[in-house]
Length: 114
Length: 114
Image 1 (cartoon, rainbow over the protein chains, first blue to last red):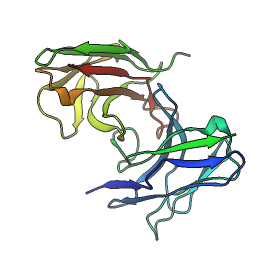
Image 2 (cartoon, rainbow over the protein chains, first blue to last red):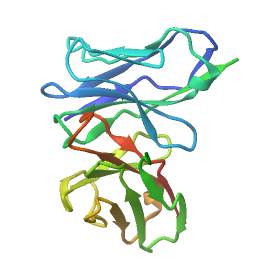
Image 3 (tube, rainbow over the protein chains, first blue to last red):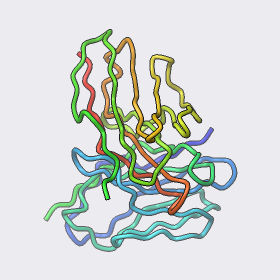
Image 4 (cartoon, helix red, strand yellow):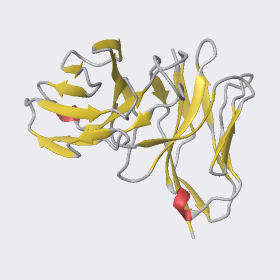
């Protein structure tokens, strides 16, 4: 079946450090891939997305590249800030358009210390 | 432009009771999906409503039911509550126009079953 696996957390970094959160997926066909962020006490916010192989999604300094050959969509940021502390979820959607359900990984907690 | 609105924000129920959660989608969105997020886990898809009908359903028992109204708002009903139903329930809306790959999530309803 379709699934998403993320690296376990928590990930603890100092401010301005480089961030990588690994995400791999299992799916048939060509899913769309997403990263969502959840701040304490809040819902999910879409961080970035990629809809086909080799696409790079980017937003707020975060980037992720859709790698079909390795079935991966790793999240990276060159210099993290304390305000980036949150839980990050990798997700996929099989169907095009709005009909497909999102399948999430278990989430990775990021803690950034000053 | 209001985003997705969920009510109530917090709820405490006793095992065996019934609960109704409500969701108003983002303006211009006509599709509503519900997700259950247990503590420390990624969200799990419950079901999706479009044109007042259930279009997709995840692996949840019949105790979970829903409804969509002509104004696109939606309700999630859970009967015979179990302790394991304690979770954050997230509503996500999407539309047939605009950014078709984006879901907008609400902040969720935190349900505690005691």
